[in-house]
Image (tube, rainbow, N blue to C red):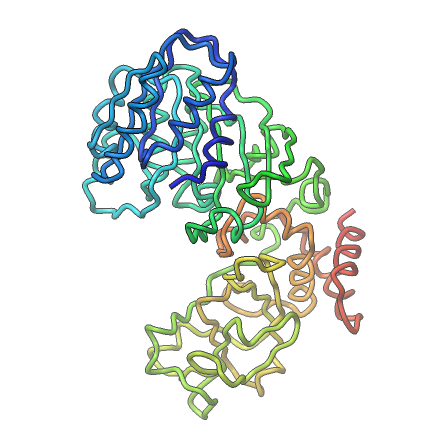
Amino acid sequence: MTPAPVARFMASLFPPSSLDACHLLDAGAGVGALSCAFLDRWASGDEFRFKETQVEAYEIDDALRGHLKETLARYAEKLPLACRVSADDFIRAAALQTMGLRRFTHAILNPPYKKINSLSDHRSILRQAGIETVNLYSAFVALALDLMQANGQLVAIIPRSFCNGPYYRPFREFILRRSALRHIHLFTSRTKAFQDDGVLQENVIIRLERGGVQGAVTISNSTDDSFSDLETHEQPFQRIVFPDDPESFIHVPTAPGHNLIELSEGVRSTLSDVKIAVSTGPVVDFRLLDHIQEGIGEDSVPLLYPAHFSGQKIEWPKEGVKRGNAIKRNAETERWLYPNGFYTVVRRFSSKEERRRIVASVVRPDAFRNAEMLGFENHLNVFHQGKKGLPEELAYGLAVFLNTTAVDDHFRRFNGHTQVNATDLRLIKYPDRTTLTALGAWARSQTTWTQAMMDEQTQRLTG
């Protein structure tokens, strides 16, 4: 269900229209909150000059559909309005129509959120329609966009997960080829917006214009669905989708200014340029339970979890770690182990409202009693060189850079998850190897690093 304030805000994003007739699509309509907000705006003034409106709403739930029909019928009593409420599966119905007449002038959507099985009928139907995606919400948006007339306006509230990651790249490319991105609204708190519904996924509201010429994008943000602290600014499209980004990540800058990653000529290297790799920790503990143990033994090596790291402190072994502190070294586990050495690690998950998304730590070989090998559990990302350790100063320099405010801010612009994947870390730009090493040498000369110190020194060295 869409909260009433969100529905009204979404309806307000449509630009004024002088069309004589409006054909509105509401797929996954529920009880009609979005359609009603749109119709209320039409009825309230002269921004919409429609002489007539047709609403086509899809809802498969029988009880909700009954309320939807009653609600729209009341609007039809006082407005020149025709309504069609369908019980059809929108994906099946829309896929059959995408090669036909594109008839909708407007679409307003709060689509369902559910993964699509790779072997399901839905996945097959979507592929036949030229749509490759992994979730119902992106399927609904793609199909709705395909059914829009030229310059048709689509407003949708959807999870922010589509903005990054390899699974949603075909969907990003699909919408960016067919439409202009006009507006993105971000809710800056995941716990306050939609708290009545228990929504944990970070949501965004987007407006797309079918076949529009891409220009600047309006970015707005508010803490929650009261919109009491709404802020709005414009950004050039090049700051939303970077021209040299093969993944077409969609960034959402929350302020007009640029940050260090964008401004500095000294932060332009890829990990490949720096000759560093990053991988997800290879030890998937539930698959190797028989080999994991609480204490270290003669035939075992340290196994590192995120819980073993607190900033730059390593607490190993540690009581209360869920699975254990060590993993047996044998023929079954050997291929998952790395030689002991210096590594930089970033945990993959942060809590919902944690201050930082990227938290980097340094693994030091002297912390593990001269162990020959180490195990890195799957909830850690590991920076390495050919599955071997890094030079000490490079490991520290990398950790300092990743812990800067600029990197964290940059990451938040394209990632709405609490999850930090190795793919995300590969796509960040870095200082060159010499600069990272110099940053590490500075870090090793300090007794402690504060946030201000890390930010200042990184900015000084990257120019």
